Image (tube, rainbow, N blue to C red; front, side, top):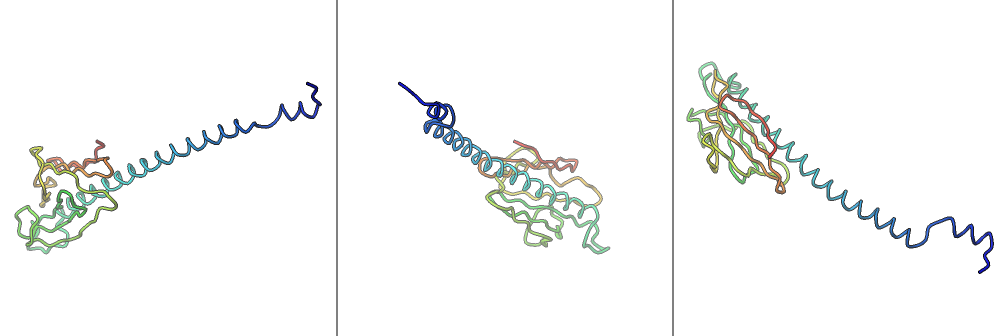
Amino acid sequence: MITTKRQERNNRYGFALVELLVAISIIVILSISLLFQQSKFDSSVQIANVAYEVATVIQKAQRYGASSVAGTFSDTDVGYGVYFNRGSQAVILFRDTDDNKNYNSGDSDVEEYTISGKTEVFEIRNSGGNSVSEISIVFVRPDPEPSTSAQIIIENDGETRTIEVSQTGQVQVKNN
């Protein structure tokens, strides 16, 4: 077959339709996989942020309890605590006015925090490692130690984080 120089040049340069379709399909596959990874990353960042916010609320109760914030001189030994309920999105910072080291109707709420998004308190473990439905962690002056040690496990889309309050009062967030 006789070909001209122009036909040879056209055959050497450019993409064939099959090559173009293969390139486009590779780009589409990579884009889809990146989108799925991005949503997983967003979920991971969100639960980490919530875990650190909850840890901050516990530390706030610890500071309030050690300094008797908002108290009078006659009730300097009133404790402050944090109340958790399994399956709830509420974390309650309270003043333990009846001095029973548990949250109840006799205590005054200082602040109520709502956990954002689909994140919730998934499991609560007491100092013995047993799963409980609710817990109050109270700090009373002059000790920075809590009334009980606990592990609060929060969950979002199958991913969990543990907020651990040790018997010495240390609060830390752990990846599960």
